[in-house]
Image 1: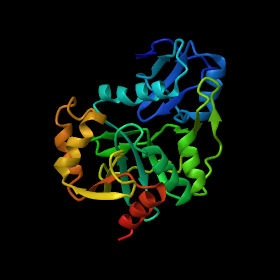
Image 2: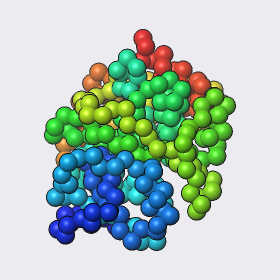
Image 3: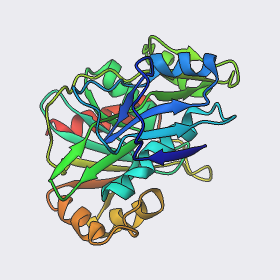
Length: 267
């Protein structure tokens, strides 16, 4: 899969145009069934005029939504934006929470549980995009990927993501579109709570909560971000954590994690 920018030819009137963050894009050489699936999963471009720097994603033989999301997330580096593999959710009282961690740590499952079970707003899923030059988050409403284990955990907590789309080439995973309840509202790049999720198979399954300094949190997040590759971004990120409670959550059931997060923002 490749991304080509700055298309000079007029866009076909029938082409579907999507937007994730600041990346406006169309699809090229896309399998028809795959494109129909993406049409129901991805947010559509709603602007009145297409930007000159729109992108064309050449999907080739790939039918992996994860790869497409990763492309559109990480290409924000070219736009001088910070990207973090994370979910960003907003509590009913307006407090913002960053949920990040390594793969399979439960970021998406936790964010979906808060959105559907607690009526929280999702500002970003899969990637959190920050434009420090203009002092704001970019809305990045990629669909949520849920495997069989995640669905089982959510159902045990009486949460059923609907609708979901199971793609025939990934029978053990479903995708759920992320509802846009943010609209045109903009948010400054700071958080009230920043969470690093971990799984430790050698430890007890009970939830362990450890406080982190801003520096410790920043070092943990380096492998899942472009903070070291974008000039001055690491310093800006640490400044945005100045009034943030940073914690590491290790293990724990979804109910315990969700309860901790809800209680933490309602203090």
